[in-house]
Length: 261
Image 1 (cartoon, rainbow, N blue to C red):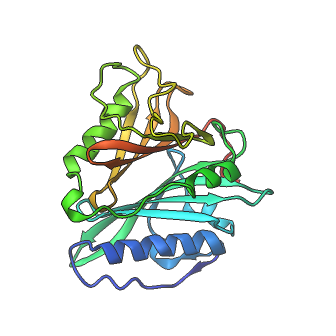
Image 2: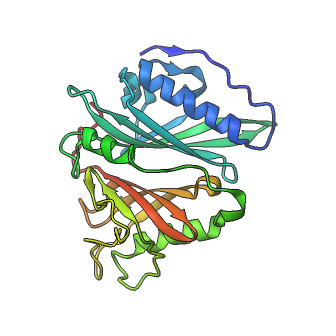
């Protein structure tokens, strides 16, 4: 596996939206080319909740990316990127958090944490997923209308708590649509609901939660061990809130053990 050298121009100790987004773009370039950028050569790489050498990861495969979307967390110095590959010979839907560390006045990526889904995973169909996502609006939210970091994280936690607590205070919105793999609850109606088919009660908890929160996009990414499937299936949930209420939910859940290829 070739690792190519590219330096990221991090010149400030604090994490900026531009520098974090630039690193996410380098990650996308690595996936597109199959050539891992040097800036990632020493990161801890986690794929489907297992730490592996980055040279054994999905990034070693050149893939044509049909869709990507990145949210940026300048508070914790992290990003989350949603990636869709529709190549019929090797389709994937991937959710990746990149976490950075500030040291000696510079910031650099130190952890790539990816949920990689493919054929055989929960409700997987990359082409259908892409079609639904391209019909959604994830525009930036005006500063005067943005929800707080606490509001966003609390909404995500309440939703993920439903499996053990049916009374969790989820701020359901209307309309709201959930994309679960390639299954979509939206019908384009004003009363579309994200609450359809959500189990409640005595379910195993969703643990090992890792967060990326972007107030400007009204979005929060949570990677979890999904307790109700496979005794803790690798899983990604991304939420979009508008006006304090859920608008979109995107999920991907790994049901197989060989999704990296």
